Image (tube, rainbow, N blue to C red; front, side):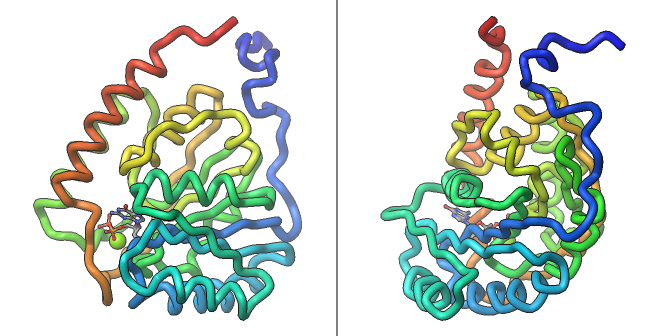
Length: 255
Ligand SMILES: Nc1nc2c(ncn2[C@@H]2O[C@H](COP(=O)(O)OP(=O)(O)O)[C@@H](O)[C@H]2O)c(=O)[nH]1
Ligand SMILES: [Mg+2]
């Protein structure tokens, strides 16, 4: 078998890697920006579900400089449970900044994240864990997305554009329900602080030979708090970051 140079340089996941048997070692984190109305419920769901899926697990709540009581609630939850940790940003850094803090804080073999607004059903994490593998990112896709037609159309165009520009395949790039082998984050340097972050991780991982597997998941309507993911500022920043990332990943890799 002819192996790409990246493989011998230790940049690619092992082709001989076996799916992990037994209970997974799992970090679960939630990016939260002004989620005072949701974060306690979401953390409670994690405390219920995770003992049924893993022995060795931790929960990380990332407060992205919220202006509401999210930070205090997270601190109270962390003080009340040994498996919960709180991470705070002094000021709002953006969705990508929140995800990067979560990836950096994770200590277990696999890292899973979903949004702190409760728009996903955590019991479906088992479906992703069943496909875990050191060379695979398992990505949920929203079988029925609970957003308006304009948002869905925009998301479809955006997904098409990033995949075309960055060269990877994934059914629902921005679906906030993904499982990664943690080792990946020691091999890539992330730069996005905005909404491009999901695409950036997928693009950099795909270039290293990681496989992306898609799994259908349920998307629920937001029941509290305000949606900020479709604001003009978020979109403009994502396009700016896309242009930079495209240039960055086109640069030849250092020998
Ligand atoms: N939009 C946005 N979301 C953030 C930020 N930091 C963390 N988040 C979290 O990212 C998640 C997605 O945000 P949301 O407004 O629901 O976007 P949507 O689900 O894509 O419509 C939520 O859990 C937010 O709390 C930020 O600076 N901006
Ligand atoms: Mg949301």
